[in-house]
Length: 194
Image (cartoon, rainbow, N blue to C red; front, side, top):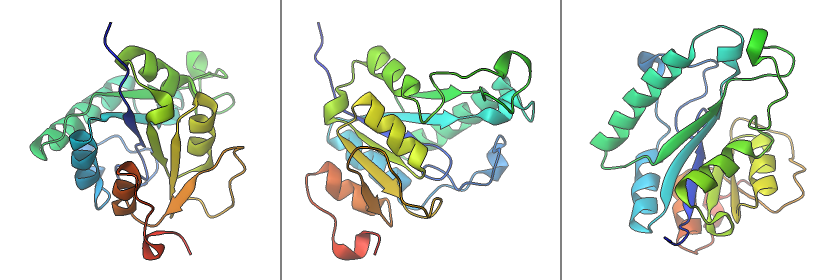
């Protein structure tokens, strides 16, 4: 039986690419500065790289699951051009109130619930306590805490309120600061949120 390995979990919109609201076309993608460097550093440290994303736009019929898969295939190719292998991506198309038809459910995969993280951990034999989750919303921190992810990092810029997640997390200004956390270094003061 193969041993467990750590993962770098990344929220997609707001961490991998700029948040624009209901992104589903490749021409809309603007990658966040430092994302490829972060992922290359993670690979060098033998982290698997997994993207997690709530996609209620599917449930609201703004785009389809096929649109999402096409975009993620394109993004995977962009990462490969940057010498980064994405080990997988997980998404939740559901919303408990604002989705339509079969997508209108209270799904255990929708962040802040931990379902996507737990599926990824099972599928990829991930050591959750040794893993790191970078998100830009309190719901990301809540999902990571509920799944038992060891290091939680909130990238400042999307959410301005204080998060109450019942677990410690670090707030950083840039993705560069996350590299230090993976390597066991605490970020410099200028990399942390003031």
